Length: 566
Image (cartoon, rainbow, N blue to C red; front, side, top):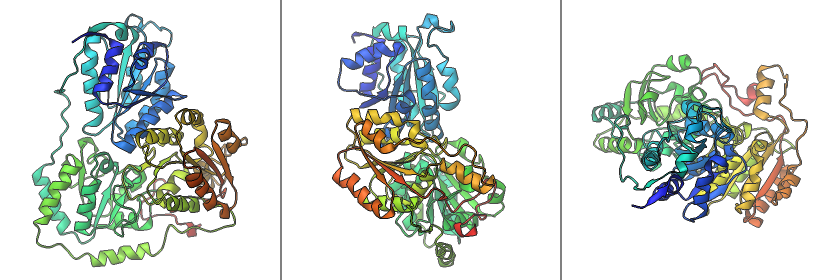
């Protein structure tokens, strides 16, 4: 063991964790660490243009690859700029380690230049955080941080390191294992509860499978697919769970919730046994909890996080454990069952809802945003990684791009953070250099982190940006139209940039699309002719297109507003 500075130890810890990329922005409190980054080439640094984007990009890498994302920022404004990214990852249970610089130990509490209480500020939106007080603790803290971030219900962990700690020296030894009395996540589900669940499933006459992001995060899509096909049950994936089960399969009913399909919502509302896997009965999924609970049904809930079970909806059979482990055991028990209920009548009822074709939309002489997503799916053969910002475009992408594989759909579900799309795409492209990566965005969202076009240029990332430009803050405008008597308060931007010229100014290819017949040629030009370039497609869509179906706030799943209702 040789003597090393704290900064050297930080880099060695990242190397031990096999971290390939760190997304960050330098500043005074982390310069010792940046100096050590410069001296090696195993850990590569991606220089973003804003600390918020650093965390979002690390988040995008984690979502698309199952690795722990890593970001590094300086103290004070560097740390506070990172908070939005940290909170976004926390809401969606994304494993991150965020390294923040801090003023020297003796300056803490003295209102020093660029000092802020990073631990205190981030405490409500992290899985855990650490303030390093001794250089001897760095290696152990890093081992704990990565372990906490990736195990149990994943989440972001912040390590706040004072500058003097990065200059101090000690001997380095990276722990082989970590043990914490206060943190022991359960992985194996209770056998008796799993047996109860199986008995409910085999006796169900109107069963439904409802899955969320936990299936994707735990890499359990294969087990879910095998189980679902064995059961023959209808299934829905939430916004965060899209791709966990193939969207092109006939058993898939589409996404549930506020902008879900009629068939998914009605089946969710009217089933007699509901198998919930890695989902949390979010308000955007089940609507009004009282309305949802008024329908008698038995609920089985599988989740790694016990605090998520019976949090919003009373559950009959709680199963705490790792989703793939529980599904494997459940499948074994199902194979021993002699027979199941005939659910042909239930499927007949579901097909009646499906026959209403709730996703149809009007065709006009202007570009319809739904059409763009359909053609995007076709030209990418459904195999691209789609990063989305937040708004109407996010919902259209979720509704009309058929995700057949997990980790192809990156979006901010819990926090709903505008601006994530481009940084997510950057992180995904770094983690998946062999994949097509597209960012579906809107004229409002893209301007939140548009400076990252510079990052994409520096690192030669051939992203495709699909800007559904309706010259409005579309989702705000939709709510103002439907619930505020068309009082469009501050939802229209009077000064929208020329996105084509802006993309060209950053050194990229810009294409404006204004006619429906030009959509397919423009997509072909972007994905085929300019496959190695970043292409910004500024697509002028129908200004007043709305997202339907819709469950209004406070309403139940069976109280959907359909396009034809207006």
